[in-house]
Length: 215
Figure 1: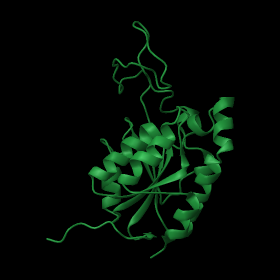
Figure 2 (figure 1 turned 180 degrees about the vertical axis):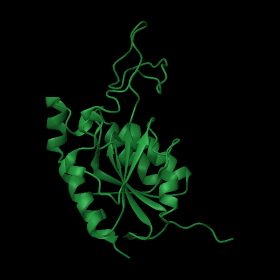
Figure 3 (figure 1 turned 90 degrees about the vertical axis):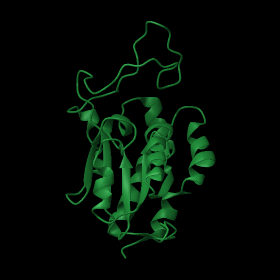
């Protein structure tokens, strides 16, 4: 039996899919002035639009793992953590971490600038990892896709957990550095510079578009 290989330099529509993680209004159009400024300064949404446009021009299918947490918290688990999502210490008696928004809200809808086509695939998820108890692996496999281009946020949460899962599933992995973000200290840089290069390839939007091919 031949060893599995994921060493193709190009990103062909025949074997590669674009995975846009949690590209939701609640994250990209949060209404939080500090976050809006942070994303605008880094051209995050604009880069995502360019990446999506390049993928579509090359015939790549896009996959949209999106948080679809049930109102009332029936699909979440209360657990003790040292900090909240912004790394602020949680004192005893304070509420545990819960989703920021829920299925059915405008915040939980895909940002209109990145709206999927009928040929794209929306993947409802309930945990950080896009593969955990979702149809993402199946949706890639039935289309003969063995490599993913991964973009979105947060780098240190959903992108990281999805990247680890992709590696364990033996998928080829490309992470788009200027389409990922985290406002938590140097977490974004840490993962992009110290973790992800050992798991796949890290490149910019322009670099990825240059490698996209229809065949």
